[in-house]
Image 1: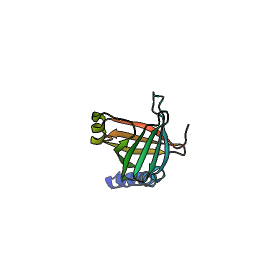
Image 2 (image 1 turned 90 degrees about the vertical axis):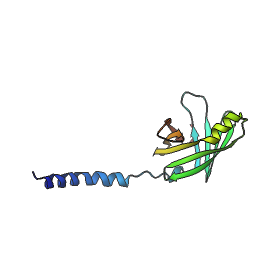
Image 3 (image 1 turned 135 degrees about the vertical axis):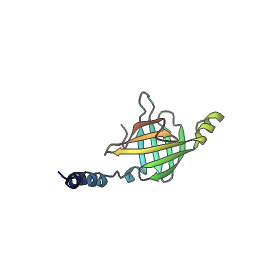
Image 4 (image 1 turned 90 degrees about the horizontal axis):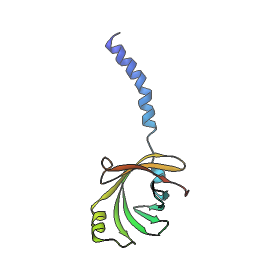
Length: 138
């Protein structure tokens, strides 16, 4: 077989795969705003997260402690969260830590019941974790 023929077969085989991957790009518009529910693993904590425009409010369902975050969408499925304030008293060290960092979130997949994300401090390539935000309370 000639090299040209082999290249033709490879291109013929890969074309549908490449086109399929491009047509299945993740659309994150449905999770840019709304109310979400977070249940951290190995914890009894529960949070209601309300994302509205450029502000995200996180409410601890058991204690009513609430924090506010500035939302900055980097692209369709990646957002940065910058701490604004909390109604819970914090030490100066905690305030400094929160104001010195951002949380980076990348939406990995969306279903009718939840979305899966990878989140990390200052980056999703270091110290990150995969978790779930639910679209309805459990």
